[in-house]
Image (cartoon, rainbow, N blue to C red):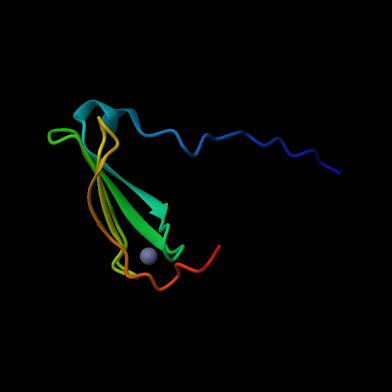
Length: 81
Ligand SMILES: [Zn+2]
């Protein structure tokens, strides 16, 4: 019986090139419906934009102050907790 060696990969680690250029998009789970959503980090305007195509969830926050600039939640899964 062979022993398998598993290498640990940090999934949260972002590619270096994208850190250098500033803006990048990551795929996250929508906080509203749990499906795949996009989180866009825009360095120029210092905002983080979370958008879900499945349920129209939208959240724009300032990455400096963490304040919510714009938010829209369809509320379809709000009771899920
Ligand atoms: Zn969603």
